[in-house]
Image (tube, rainbow, N blue to C red; front, side, top):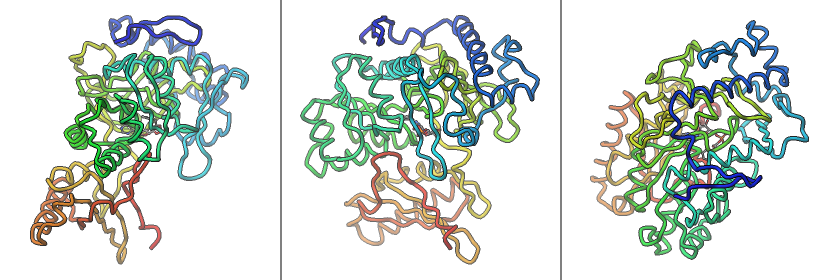
Length: 444
Ligand code: DLL
């Protein structure tokens, strides 16, 4: 591992040192940063000041990390309501970058960064890559989208600061991705797991097997994916597939990442303080319990976030990791409070369906969930692609597979769903975040 990286002012930092701070030292640093951040937000963001005043809390009341629970939450709606610049805590002249998350309806969510913020961002991405064993000499193909999306530039500056060779190819143009991967001896790729599936599949069609290439690491995130999906990817392409997590409102990618143990994602908690709450009551839950992840930025200058409700469901893993890092881990994020589908009164998360589908042999990891309403009753159809060999099997065998999947889904969810086996390539491939659910219930 390259031991040092330098920021844009030429200062040198030991890579990943903050991952290993003694816990007391880490907590002292968190408190000191929290206090400064709350001051900054209180004095510069009217909404924060107003909400704190309503609760009768002043920045001086934050004397320990547990006082965090006295602070108000921030939600996605707050970002929308204060569009475009209402949550900025620094003058525009100190802001060097803006990003936005696309959002399906209404105004986008805009986020801002100072020079210092983009340096912190690069540093957490350096720690991400370093945790995957990447270093100077590696060739990183960055297929996250460049532009307003945080994935492309976030990974880019981290990879560059690491000292690796970055190929800023962005998403799309899959044949070119494969050519570049081969011709430049790419050792790592950054993209969504669903896009990687597509690249791998297309490569095979072109007669190129990723197992024959130097690529050995996948830096996958931006969408939920299951452990079953990871196992499929690793077995099929002989790479180590790592899960990375982040969100625009907090910084982008670089909030949390797996290490080589692949046993939960370490939160870079010297910059992003995690809490888990009961999404219904807002009550803070102890480590180990599952709930909604709430993140507080400890060093963001342009747009500090106080107790941001991510809507992502996970739990903090109380045990230390075998890798020796002292920063805590969260479980893989399988679902969001708002991606829950209620089908005939039963709560269903797309990730549960993914795991059920992939447990059957002969399926491909391409699927889609289609919701319709028939005579007022919700209907769910799961379309899943099967391998060409399976598809050319006898009808009886296909029917057996279909029933096996339907019974697997039934066991997992307690719900009868219609399973349709479709030919390879029927389901649209994604170059970014996959769209797994098509909800036509409103149209009928
Ligand atoms: O997706 C940032 C990112 C880029 C993360 C590249 C990782 C890699 P947004 O577009 O704002 O930002 O979407 C954030 O995506 O709240 C989660 O619901 C979901 N998400 C991100 N990473 C993961 C992951 C980027 N590893 C939202 N597993 C988050 C599950 C994820 N969900």
